[in-house]
Length: 305
Ligand code: GDP
Ligand code: ZN
Image (tube, rainbow, N blue to C red; front, top):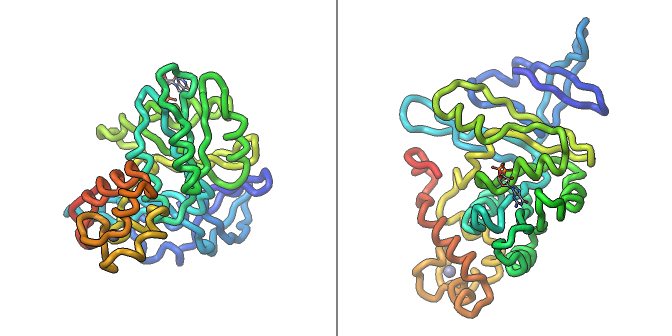
C-alpha cells in the first residue's frame, strides 16, 4: 500500500508500517485520502520516501459498503477522511431539480458528521426552476447555497472562494454539470468522468485510486470513485430523524420517545408540518427515506441503497 503526500510543494511517497496493516482484510484501506498521518523518513536514492507510523484521529469520514465474503455481506470501507464540505450539485433543469436526492445526501452526510453545501447549477436555462424558494429553505436549515451556471460563469467565482480552504468534494446525479463546473473552476484539471465508471461497472477490472487535486484557489477537490455509492449505508430507521435538523426542535413534544414521526399518535413533528413550520417536501423526503431503511443495523446484510 502506498500513498503520496504533498508537503508544501514536496511529494512524499510512503509505505504503511507493517504493524498498522496487521489483522486487516485486503480491501479495507488503512489510510485514505484526506488522512493526516505521522511518517518517518526512509533513505532512498529516488525522491522522498517515508513510512507511515500513525494515522491521526479523523474529524469525519465517508464510507461505502464494500462486498465482503461470499454471501451478501458488506463491510464498511472508508473512502475519504477529514472532508471540510461535501457539495451537492443539482441542476434547475435538464435534468429537473431532484430535491429527494439532495435530502438523501444531506441526511447521509449528517450521519457521518460531514458539512454540506448545495450548488444549484444551470441558472442560465430558460426552463430552470425558480431557485429562490430552494435557496430560502436550505439556507434556513444552515446549508450554504450557491447558484451557478457552469456554461455562462455565474457563481463560479463565489464557488471558487468557498473551495479555497480544506478539502471539498462534489456529489450529484449524472448530467447535472459536475464535470462542467470543475472545468469552469479549474481549467485544465481532468477528473474521472462518469463514463469511465460505467465501463468499469460492466466488468472491466480497474483499480481506481482516489486523489486529492490541489486547486489554484487554495483548497483541494477530492476525486474518489466511492462517492458514487454514497448513501444511507449503516443507518437504521431511528437514526434518520436526527439527520433532519429542523425536526430537532419539535421531536421533544412527541408522545413516544422512539417516535418515527410517521403514523404515531401525537407526533409533534407531523403537527409542525401541518402548521407549515416544517417544510412538507422535506417531510416527504424523510418518509421516503425512512421506508428504505432497515429497522435495525443487523438487517444491512441483505440490502443496499
Ligand atoms: P455531469 O454528468 O454532472 O458531470 O454533467 P456534465 O458536466 O457532463 O454536464 C451535462 C450536460 O449539461 C452537458 O451537456 C453540459 O454542457 C451541460 N451543462 C453543464 N452545466 C451547464 C450550465 O450551467 N448550463 C447549461 N445550460 N448547461 C450546462
Ligand atoms: Zn414524532
